[in-house]
Length: 153
Image (cartoon, rainbow, N blue to C red):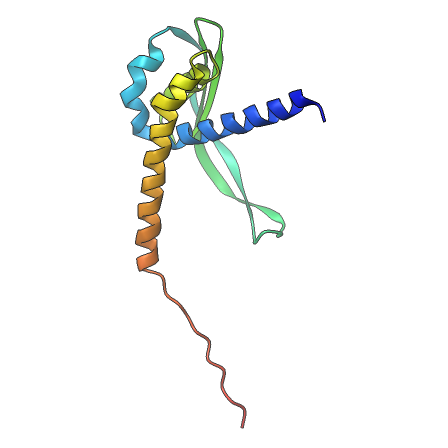
């Protein structure tokens, strides 16, 4: 198999991972706003809000169906060095979409490791902790149902 295909697949997987973290970051990105905006950029596609159809699936093998619509905001930016960043975030937060796109652009550049260490890793850890708290809270309300079989006369 061609090694460039493997490299492209691996880098696409890493990018999907950081874009997922950025999309869930919401207000946490505000703390990095001045650093992300620092080198200068232009909006190729200013933040705009729209709707997307969310698809669902019953079980692991059920047929896909339209679950409903969801509001998303997207943005595309270009840094002064030419690098382009994209974002799609749930909801109507235009500042969140713009900062996520800026972060995506920075993460594709020479300072990739710096942005991973300074931005993505802390956000990922914070999101993991929040997810653990929600899981623990949900576990306290878990109800185990037991089916009793009646004997036949």
